[in-house]
Length: 475
Ligand code: FAD
Ligand code: AMP
Image (cartoon, rainbow, N blue to C red; front, top):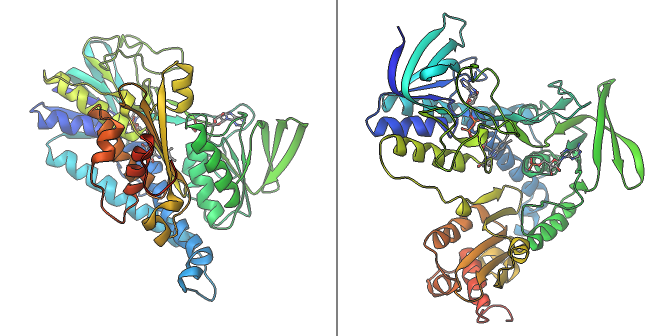
């Protein structure tokens, strides 16, 4: 006999575990199934984000930033050390302990909210029957629910003739676990993950070359931002080669030789390690029985409508496995919204105001439309901007690189997009998201008191500049 639930969630990442907790908070009898095995061999709910994504990458970005600053930036503060050294295994152990704390925390949260957690692989059949194959190899367990939420996440895309071997040719999992600093690191794909993980090892002393097929850098970002960022990253020693298509890679004598094609034709480069970060794809292997009734789209994503309903009655899907940006906060918001819809409450997500962040140094963050998008759509807009070089707090803490750029409707002044390249952009963008959610205008932000001295004054000044009344720059 199958155990009966109101809601079964398959996948325990930021989409799935959040959906499960919210469903339980709403009084629904909820199960959450996750198959991830942590480094200690035990269950580790939290998905890609907590185990091998957002959190461990930020832990290593932080460690490598300290090391880099100690060597290259603290001199001007009068701080020096004779010889800085990096103990890579200690750095990785710290990262692992952060991950373990957080995945343990998720397990506790599930328990505290009375969510039944199953460590194993879930498979959806007809009539919302779910079979769980336990991770410990025990007998399969049968469950059934009124509603099933699919949150199986994503896996790295592998390109033809470049096979992962987990040691020399790696994905994000491998690049978060190198046991020493590679002398040379090739990165295929100069997207968010390639830039973040490339930065980590570059700061620790690797010579990093990023090979990017597209002719433009960071195409999703506003071009003013991506141009400044490209210049800054080059100064930092990241060698970003655009218009460069990787065709194959081969491991020989503990080195990886990459064959690439650029404007000069075909050539080869040899690295100690190669990170493949060419994007991610929905992970649906073994998730759906033939009779589940759930359809995939042409990209292999689970097909959903605007409310996250799949083609099977009572089956919902969220996160990286469905359309939309592959971001943890997008997955979590969808999870909460679906739980609330199941409980009969209204719920709606504004995809237009989902913030994006790239955790380089400085950070890149944006919300809303880019200038290119507004131009293409024929929208009339005004622009304001402010450089961090003119912000007192930024200069006091050596963060004078970058800018805030704000775009507002020419007639109504409603904010249409904000783009930040600068220190703490990931935090500064929150104010702009709030403003846009409330359909705020640049005048609203211009009239709000911002504390002095803070980096947020750069947002304030960009809003003032939009109305040609910035104080600390020319208009
Ligand atoms: P996932 O987090 O992938 O979780 C899915 C879970 O379901 C996994 O544990 C998987 O094992 C499990 N699962 C799959 N199928 C089954 C099944 N059949 N049965 C049981 N369990 C199953 N996003 C950000 O917003 N900010 C960042 O800074 C950021 N940094 C990133 C850095 C890296 C290196 C990577 C790789 C990603 C990063 N992301 C970041 C993206 C973010 O990790 C994802 O958008 C997010 O994890 C998606 O959440 P999810 O719940 O949809 O899926
Ligand atoms: P993201 O989706 O942000 O992780 O970025 C992945 C990047 O990898 C994109 O900018 C792609 O253009 C790039 N890419 C994909 N395939 C290749 C390839 N074979 N060689 C070089 N770059 C690639």
